[in-house]
Amino acid sequence: MCRPGYFWDNPHFASARTSRVKSHLNGTRFFVDDVNMSTPSNPDDFMPNTAVDVSNEPIHWDLGTSLSYSEYLGLDKVLNAQKPLSYEHDEMMFIILHQGMELWMKLCIHELTAAINHIKRDELGPVDKMLGRVARVQVQMAQSWDVLATMTPMDYSAFRNSLGRASGFQSYQYRTLEFLIGNKNASMVEVFKREPEVYAALTRTLNSPSLYDETLRLLSRRGFGIPGDYLERDWSKPYQASKQVAAAWLAVYHTKEENWDLYELAEKLVDLDHRFQTWRFSHMKTVERIIGYKRGTGGSSGVGYLSKALELRFFPELWSVRTSM
Image (tube, rainbow, N blue to C red; front, top):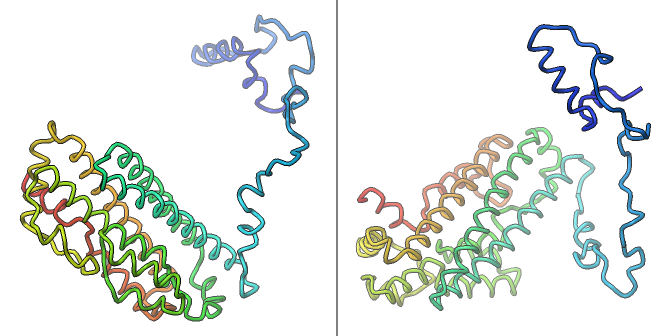
């Protein structure tokens, strides 16, 4: 006997499905024996496949001297990097989620660093693709908080003390991302002094032009009026919004036909900023859901600190100029 539903799924019975639908709509009774159709000559055709036939596939069963899938990806290290400090079930998910987030951030840093270099050379074609890829990664990162939200306050409390003072506040890749995009804050580097190489790398990023700084330099090279003190300054200082910069962006929007690449770049930057804020908001609400208003393990006020970050804008003029359009 066929499995339930198989009769109607099998392509041999397409005409039967049509007949049944018509009969049902006409209110008539339907009998399988009334259907006029050809029957497959092989009885096995009635049964679904239970395994993929690879007998005619040239599979490399012996890899010889070639790398294997797990060797290429370094899975021995990746899959052995989860070291729970408790016996609590949810700690494994907690670790994997944050490690996954760090891998996504590594890709964002890779793409943004390349985008900055292309902007320096006035090559905006590749930048569009790179920022678009970062945007897709940001969607994945924001959705990751939904997985963490499956952990209840009691679940987290059961192993939270195992973290000690370890906290996302100490994520040097997150801080690198903020510095690369344009949110500079020299005091944030201090927590990394115990890791000399990380501290040195972050200090270099802090003192280098950001994605937005290089974008403003590009606008200046294209003839838009960017003040000189925005083209050469102390890059470690927080960016301050400028009316002249806002006017330059407004001019880009009003001349988008002649400056289409700059217009597209502006919208990609807005998208980057918007999605970063979406990630921050989802993070804040997930923390609120799990620990309420407790202090963070890194010493911050927790939700209170995360709420402050929601007020930040990487590209303030690109937001303010919208009111003037």
